[in-house]
Length: 277
Ligand SMILES: [Zn+2]
Image 1 (cartoon, rainbow, N blue to C red):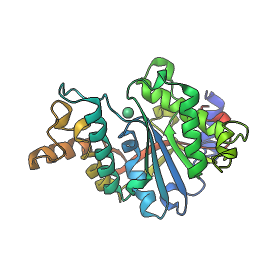
Image 2 (image 1 turned 90 degrees about the vertical axis):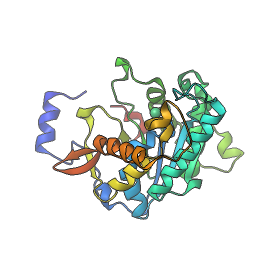
Image 3 (image 1 turned 180 degrees about the horizontal axis):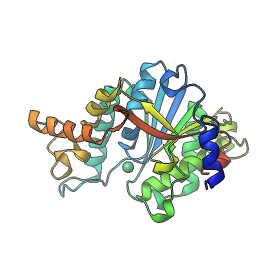
């Protein structure tokens, strides 16, 4: 919790107390980046930044916990159909960002019920991916958000599961089967960009001027979620008017600071034990 004193400290020591990245995100290169989300579109909150990182020769991997097989108002879609639609939408969106399709990993849990899955199994699945991908930076829902006020349960759960997995991945004797049987090694993620943070907790704004059009084009691929397919899905292709309307709405959601399009994060560097503070 921030005290008045630490707020004063923030003013006096910008960049120290704020814990912004030492090198601005816009200048990062050669890093491996992993994103954990609950649904195939949660990564869209960071798409401008992810496209920028991909363009700057970083490797971006998206790990999604659920198939998204519940999120529709179309009474005719089955879970199977929706899961398939959402996979294709995600791959199409990532293509717009320049992220290869084989960097998309879906862990296959059911949408809407993540909180009720076997948490040890889910954390184990995430730990395996962390130990395989060995990211320099993890993007995850901010586990420090005031979730006790209630928030979409899959997002709240994904925030905690990602933090729990980041912590478990560094301990050799947790999920030791990965190490003994699968040839993986324990791994400590050094740095985090947490998204969907409480407004006052955002300490890092990334200028996405160069990638905002890609972000909007990618967002327009989620036809079943943010487009006309939400009520009645008629396939991935939109009429010119529908596409224009969808992109206009997506553009209106882009945040601006000093006239520039931005994405905001809570940056954190250190042991995962303090990730939620
Ligand atoms: Zn979501």
